[in-house]
Length: 95
Image (cartoon, rainbow, N blue to C red; front, side, top):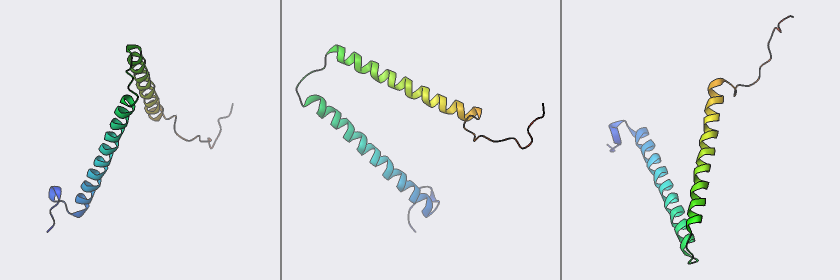
């Protein structure tokens, strides 16, 4: 009998293995991105000034603010029904 996490049979084991493979691939991409950023920042031998670090921090901060704001708008419009398709009324009200 094959060993599977949780003892729920083959489907759970396949799901677990797919999830593990996905997480491993994402960590590999993250590692490659960190290595690329480090290699790019040290290749030319220059150092970043204090103004550069401040500008980078401000850019990261405002990127996060814009991203969070847009996600909040997506959730707000979904909850309020703004994402529903337009419908024509069957019997228009008479004036």
